[in-house]
Image 1 (cartoon, rainbow, N blue to C red):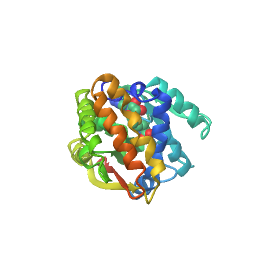
Image 2 (image 1 turned 60 degrees about the vertical axis):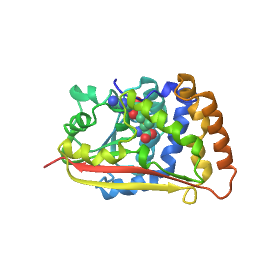
Image 3 (image 1 turned 90 degrees about the vertical axis):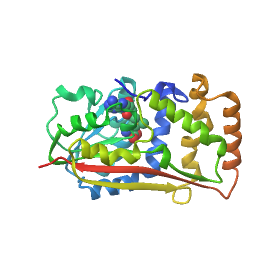
Image 4 (image 1 turned 90 degrees about the horizontal axis):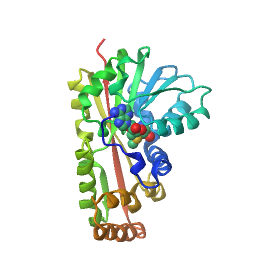
Length: 271
Ligand SMILES: C[S@@+](CC[C@H](N)C(=O)[O-])C[C@H]1O[C@@H](n2cnc3c(N)ncnc32)[C@H](O)[C@@H]1O
């Protein structure tokens, strides 16, 4: 598998990443679900999620569409094992395939109604190629929905944690050096167009600490998330210490705003 996703290097390894993914899905799931429905996803459809991770998003989808059929794709075998356990609480025999998108070519999968890739395309080195591969698994008129973020448009915090700004850009540049693209959010529609999709739509799921709570953001913004980058040498110790101070100043200030944006782009396979 080529790409920039390294969950075992995240804070607290895979277990920590599984918790972070649940928190991340929780923040915007209801908005993303409403957008998926508006883009044509219906109960009873055949839905494939690629890059299911530990099943945080797929388990919520299964809950939301009890009569739909699901296929989950995941290249990381340890994450797939966790997902299998999680999803077994929802389905008797979750249909899961151990593969990355690039390796799916020979998979025996019947044409599906919808494919969803959430927080996956930012880790790919050939997004248009991946979207073209996914199109081959869709029924004519079926949809590919890509949900992702953009480092330049990720949202805002007020008052700004200036200590974190430079660090984040360094971490995102490092993701780019490993084959990913943290600034992919504003490119999703172009990726779909260049892969041959039609009727492309773009929407945003926005959440802040009034529509959700600051507690729900903590697993995503906690400075200890930067420990792997500190170990790797991407972030220096003085930078890390400044980030910790900035974080606590922010979190202890009752008059703060944090707002984040997820981009949701959807395209149709031509009839
Ligand atoms: C941030 S996680 C998102 C998991 C899940 N979609 C969610 O929203 O909770 C990114 C996932 O993309 C998967 N991934 C990375 N590169 C991939 C590829 N080339 N093909 C398929 N999945 C990939 C990773 O293994 C990981 O499970």
